Length: 385
Image (cartoon, rainbow, N blue to C red; front, side):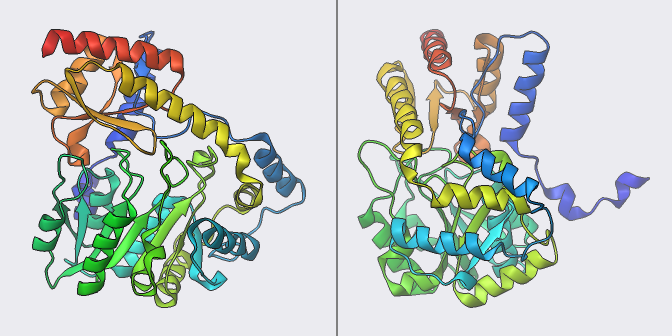
């Protein structure tokens, strides 16, 4: 039978819980249920029109063929300029690899650095795809515990480093918590990475979505030694509401960048040609056009944290567009199921994020939906706590 031919690698991989919940919510809505879908990990804003027009121009001009497998030179140069301006990081064009989304960039990184059973440290709560991608790449995911503020427990981090430790994944601002690491905290992590020669995979895809006057800091900007150990991953999906365009990118030291370029040349060949032109337009434009979106996200965040019942335990997000919350003593699965059945709220169970007992909600939805969401969450808490 054909099912007996499936590889063990494929059998070991769990499907994305966030995509699964989003699909389930869409099915319920199609069946007539009045579901508020809080599982979506993408801005609810449309891609700005001038970016769409850049893709249309590229199509009309016949820019539909293969490009350099690592991305067109103009885009990679624009990314170098962006790193210099926004993050005070100097890279050459050859150190930049443009891929089919930041998720693709992350997987390429893991394929390039992981040998069988190499250990990759992942601080919890973590994005659901990190452990599965590590597994696919042949590595072993080692989870670092979190403290009450949902940031990594540094003492635990030190205790789990072994001779097999190859890298640590750092995600700031974070999915699912929205935490943002301070410069002081990043310096402490950088010192540990440098002491043991550990690669830092810095996932910075939410870097522009920070609130309360905070500023994103790239760990790679803290000195030449940590920069050489850091692979910075970013993309256009969250900042420019371009999730479906599938353009991500990374910057790394030349040996790593070359290895990733080789891998990509044998897999996807190149990122989509006309989507690269759209990304180029987005990155090189006056960035003030993203300010209204960020302000709206901050307004929504403030509404949620100012109106949730004291009976609801949550992590205050300083970035991204998620809130990780807990109501009572239910498991993540029980809480998510009850919220869906009783309150018609589609959330993502926290156990797949390494945060058992919690669920993740996204505030990348309308204020009308959020007002109703808070009302339903508070009513649920009154009945269950």
